[in-house]
Length: 160
Image (cartoon, rainbow, N blue to C red; front, side, top):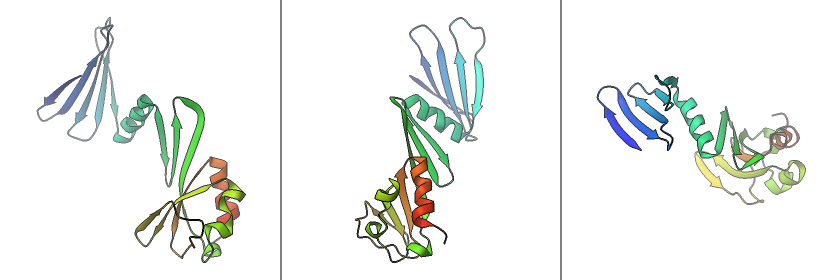
């Protein structure tokens, strides 16, 4: 890989394939990213300008771990396991579960969701124990399939 500083433009990263195709990525000082592809038999490169989010998504595709971020939901899929989709979701605790524990609610048993963290008053509790009691204002980070996350929101959290 060849790295070049382009004064007042940005930084260019260029790769050449064994058959002579060239790919250049330029991180512009504006924060945008330009992607150039010049095939060995082409006269001119094709050019695409990407936003930071688009570039991150392309990068995750190229590395084999696809992340889709939508509001408080992240979907992770892996190139090597194409049928696996994991959702990580942030859910606010509703009044109906305040004072109850993860174990009392049988969250995993009823929905298949695993609570991997709780955010409480600016503090993170990673891998909370089953006896952890929810408090008003808690946010839970849950992991599971999309249907399991939806079930957790409907069956466990219910209406506020």
